[in-house]
Image 1 (cartoon, rainbow, N blue to C red):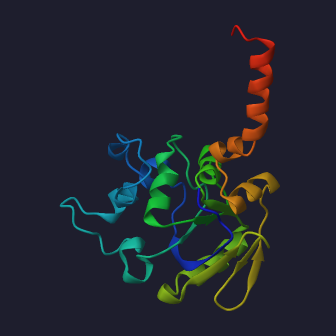
Image 2: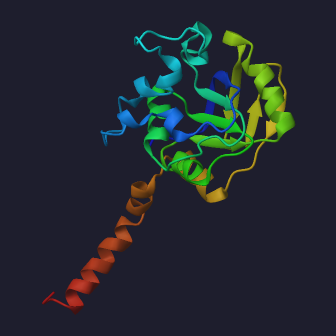
Length: 201
């Protein structure tokens, strides 16, 4: 998993409450278990018209936001079913951080496990970030995980909370497999002792 330390990039505003995982990545994209290639399906029912052409009104299709790395979203982001494809699609598109006032628990957990930082802010802070994000190509935010700060284009700073364990995992690029491999030495020692004690097994 790619390490997350300091992220600077364009923030796209998505002023929509209760964005569920089916809106993030519709069900027809769930046939694959690959984590790559899902970016094309991200928000596809809003990004594309019925004929397959792009909807120019959707935020991620606007020139200023095509390379967005941060998503500023409204309340209750990631609700609905527990599909892990939702963070996979965000990550494949290039989004490494989602900011909202609240997240569905399973989506929130899945973000951390896939290298995405979900940040919870107050309603007042969210409105300030929406204002920043609506500047188009000038909507650049810096997310500093070590300092737990969001720095805006005008120099303003918003502090955020993050679980210390999850922070360590993101800073070091550790998913569940990486955490297990950190203990590889102890696992090997245990296997050797178990094999010596029970050579018949």
